[in-house]
Amino acid sequence: MDASKHILVVEDDRHIAELLCLHLGDEGYDVVHAADGTAGLQLLETGSWDALVLDLMLPGMDGLELCKRARAMARYTPIIITSARASEVHRILGLELGADDYLAKPFSMLELVARVKALLRRSDAMARDLRADAGTLELDGLRIDPLARVASLQGQPIDLTPREFDLLYFFARHPDQVYSRLDLLNQVWGYMHDGYEHTVNTHIHRLRNKIEADPADPRRILTVWGRGYKFAAAPAAAGPGVSSGARP
Image (cartoon, rainbow, N blue to C red; front, top):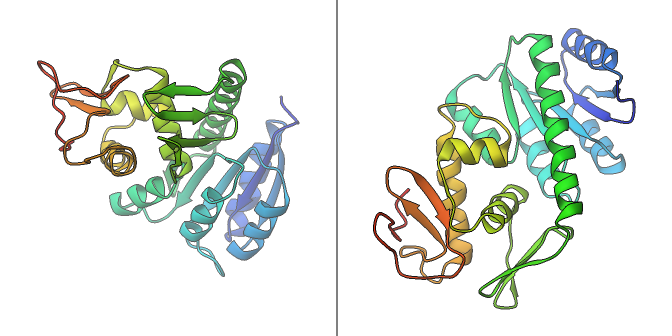
């Protein structure tokens, strides 16, 4: 058990909140509960949290806005959204706002605990990787500092969301290797679920708009038709089987 992990649960259903606190507490986690979005934001801003379990339909500030605020903070906190809104639209919206996982109600408490554990393992692994690869990456005018979590292109800062930074950093660490959408979901988002590939397309589109001289004719993030994407170590014309086109 790992008593050093601090988990914030923001849930307005008292029965569900009690069960969440009980099951996560049984794993040795230090769990704090907030019953509305406003209180959750105050705790998020003033505490140091290793994970956030977040309901969408909350009094005060709703869960999507709280997720958005969390992703605007300097510290990256893994987020699992739990919600009775099980539609694909809400799942995709939550993930695109920066949530790491989405679990529709009703859900198994054992599954929720397993997903929290998986997120914490991934977060710890990423922290170890950052310490091991603390050096700044530089690729043809693109500069990425993994510790400060900042990037620049030709000396100009790039405004990236936390997930966009993670995706760019992963690509830059593995230049010229091809990854499918599911590969990227597993490596960058930390899960591998069919149906979520759309969020990969969206993030790649946004990255291209921020780092390509011409997003409609990209030279850094290339589409490899029928296989996925690859990051060119240096901008170059497309080769056989590789398209520079921006279409996902």
